[in-house]
Image (cartoon, rainbow, N blue to C red):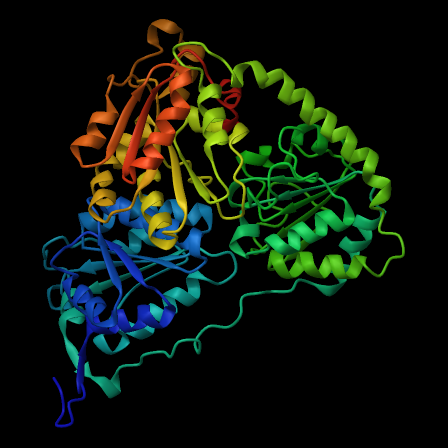
Length: 562
C-alpha cells in the first residue's frame, strides 16, 4: 500500500527479509522454490538481490557456505518448510563444522495453524538448534528484519557459523505499517569482531619466537576467515619460520616460496621446539594433538575460546583474530635486536631436505604412464594445469585425498574443500558459489564419481546460469575409501558390498545437460582434455578412468577414523 505522496505505508514480511539481507550486503540467495517462501522472492526482486534457483536444497545450503568462504561475507539460502528445510540440514551441519557464516531461512506453516498438522509442518528449530549458532522462529511480521539481523550477528560472533530462521507463512505474507517494523541500518547493528588477543600473551609469543631455534607454524582455516594472509606472510618471512597450511589456509604462501612446506610436516612437528597452531582445532586431522612433540612448546591461536586447549594441553593460548594477532606478534618481535631469523637457516635447510626426499620418492608415480590411470598422475596433471587465477575445489574421498598431497593453489582463497565434516557433494554448489562471487576466476573442481552423484544434477543449474568451469571426475566406479577399509577388515570376498558403483560415462551426462564432456583412458590425454574444456567456455566434465586398486596413503592408514 502507498500513501498519497507515493510512499509505502505498509511492508510485507518477505520484503522486510529482503531489506535486512540488503543491509547485510547479501547480493544473492540460493534457493529452491516453495509456496511458503515466495514473498521473499518478490522482495529480492525489488531490492536487486539475485535469486539462483537450484534442484536440491542441500545444494542451496552448500552454495551459501561456499559463497561465504569465497567472499568473506555471510551467505544466504532460502528453503521451504518441511522437506525443504530438512534437505538443507547437511549443508548447515557442514558449515557448522567448517566455521562458515551463513543464514538459512526456512518456511513454516502459518502460526494460525500451529500444532494443527499444516502442510510440511516440522519442529525445524528444535532439529537445527544443535548444529547452528542461532535458531529461532519469527513470531511477528514487525520482527522479521530485526531477527534476520540478529541471526547474522550471532553467525559472525567469535568463530563464525550458520544461523537458521523459520518464518511462518502468515508472518511472511502479512503487511505491517512501515514505521512499526524495525529495519536495522547497514553498518549500525554489529560490532567489530577483530579481537586483538591478550597483550601479555602477544608479548610472550613474540619472545618465544625470537628465542626459538626450530619453530614451525600451521596456518589453518581461520587465516582465510580473518583474511590474515599478509600478516601471516610477513611474520614467517621476517622471522624465518617454516609454514604448513591446511584447509582454507592453503595458498597463504605460494608454491615455491622458501617458507612454504607441505610434505615434511610430520618431521617438523616431531623435531620443533616451538609449534604455533593458527585457526585449526586439535581434531582428527591433527591426531587430536598427539602428532605434536611432547617436548615442544605449543601455542594455539583461535577465534573460539572453547577450541583452545581442547583435546591437548598447550603452553599458551590466544583467543582472537589471526590477522590482528599475527601482526601484533611481529610488531612485538621487532623490539628485539636479534630476532633469531639468521640462526634458523639450518632448520629450514633440514626441512627442505625432508621435502625433497618425499618428492623424489613420489616422483615416479606422479609421472606414471600406467593404465588404468594412477590417481597421482591425475592430480599431478591438475596441479600443472592450474593458473594464478584458478580456484580449486575438491569433492570426494580417496581421489581427493590424493589431491591434498599434490595440488597447491597459487593464491589465498583459491582452495575449497568440505572441511572436517567430510561431506561429499559440496563440489557443484561450491563451483556455483565461486563462479557467482568471482566470475573473473577460473574454477577447477575434482570429484570422486560417488561424490559427484550426490548433487550432480545441479550441473544443469551451472549451464542455465552460464557458469563455466573445468570439472574432472576421478572415476574408479567405487566408493574407494570405504572399499579399502572393508577389504582390510573383512577380506576381498566382502570388500565390495555396498560400495561398488556402475561404470558411468559422465561426459555424456555433461553433454546431455548442455555442457562439455570427454572420456579419458590414457594418462597422456589428461592435459589436452583439460585444455579443451577450458577453451569450450562451458561447464565441463572430463571423466578420467583411474585405477580402482590404488589407494591414497591416508586411506590405507585410515587416518580419518583414528
